[in-house]
Picture 1 (cartoon, helix red, strand yellow):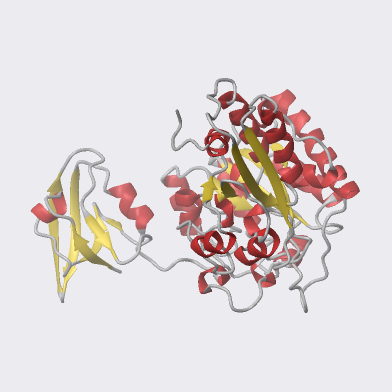
Picture 2 (spheres, one colour):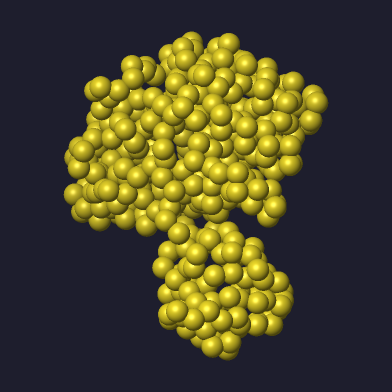
Length: 437
């Protein structure tokens, strides 16, 4: 097998060795190069023997370079391979609940162990091979993020619509035995993998601690586009309290034994249950921020630290923060408290109802441009409209419904300022500052 080289960067070891875009890379120091993980791992040595193919001829090129100095090769794709797609039919899959007509990229289900390490994506392990697990262990790739959902093999097969889902749990235990650091995600479905089944899962995962360094309990998302799908309903406030109770009980056990809570319920459970978000210290190293675990506590801590020393605006300033229904009360309380210390400031927080996906969806990350326009048009939004960056795709230009930021800005006739989930940045945005000063 050989990987096509797209380009050779100028003045790099590869260029000096005469490698060109006509070559294909076969191996480095005798190790076959399949994808980016192989390439990045084996290129770090000082002395390299590259086996290359050009046309029908194969040759070996010697390279001597600095430790960790890049060779200088670019490939057709970042992964040097096709992205691995998901082979499951999970009963709770959010992508299956999307309406037709959205961006094609939104319908792609990835399940790629390389993306888990490189970008923090979660994998189910159902399409892993023994070779890939061997490589993770050999290369000491860590942490690996795993969507576990349940450790009951039969239930896992049912929930994930894959007959291999139960068997693939062996990889979790094998990685843990090799002391690979693992972050676990459990998407909880009411009446299916919570309650006694959740207790079983947490007990099984406890045998893998400390290799398992965090466990996030995340509620399923239910949109209005579930026709023909498995019947699921959102968590009630009482059910959310019960999940939090289990998470905190296990967290206490882990804390007493390891000095780390390890098991956490997502912020969304606390908001649903109308319970206060724990303080920042509760979340340790914030291993599961991307899963919405401790996100609000982190933002509050940063905001309050930033607000200890601030310069009040010289002129009256009015801003509007639009966010999801779930987090709106939390953010309103945070900004109301700050307003009491800042005379020249008026902050209003407007919760946006999710008409696009359905009112059962209450998080900011799934708010669309058309819902923003429909619910904010005609309102006095002040000097700026603040929007969380999670509403937008990576390029920060389009909402999920392909409405652009420029379109929303022009329609509402107010400047838009995008705010990442960072308390310091939120304070800067509220005060109208352009940088962290």
